[in-house]
Image (cartoon, rainbow, N blue to C red; front, side, top):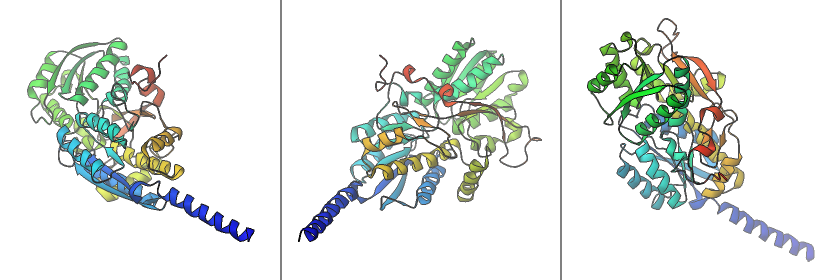
Length: 404
């Protein structure tokens, strides 16, 4: 009888432990919400491509984790904080979403990060840029995956000042991202020995940049820094070309320029433009393989935001698989403990402030005669190691960082 009893007890123990393990996936599903810009100035850089990148990662993972299905839903936050918060709150409270991904537009990203902490879920931000996300507004529940205003400014600003381009004027989008980008870039310029001669701020999603560009031109600054993104950047660059600003000797740097922006403007209009990026489709065999698949699905090469989302989704699912639960604090701990090694990042790491640290790149847009194809747009000037590109851990004011 003892062997039989032992077998029965072992079976019961297995059943109990198995039941407990399966119950670790909340609601028997891992649900990801992609909150993005589907219809406005960041739609090309994020939007449907962001959703596609997450869907690709989930499909490549097998659409299940620990035997439970992975679902992906999406919504358009319209670049409005109140709209974004209402969607996110409904997702967390009623739709049982476990993690929110992407969230371009820092004025939306910052309150979403705060709400995620309140609800004890996970936020993996790829689209928002403000370095405050891992600075004064850092959260144990948020990872900032792809880029931030500090890295963009640090990589490009130091390189430009080093080349003698040491007086700057900023044309800045008047919201959290633009102001953080200008702040971080101005600090880099000053620290590198340059001077900031002035700035002007424009409304989000502007169509007419004439008055702003004329002020920048009148400043006689050697560099006009565009502290904006998406449609605002492309509109500003188009009008700067019409005004002949670069022909007059001033240089323009787009502090956030996506490959889709460069493609839309064309190599003729953007040749010689200096761009900081976290990803370029034509870096190596791995980046080309992913980008070819993405292109076939979406119709354009992936931006750094979209490539970062595939990488982040894979890392998130692997963390759940490794520990057998989607409980937010445990998943965050596992993600921080695991290096990121994929086509997007080699030796990437998530710090306690939520910053995913990885190499950044400085590119120059090719001349039309140098380009061998429609998307052959960049040539690499420098690879900047992540620890040099991103803000030092103790300099951001994140309350999670012990500085004593």
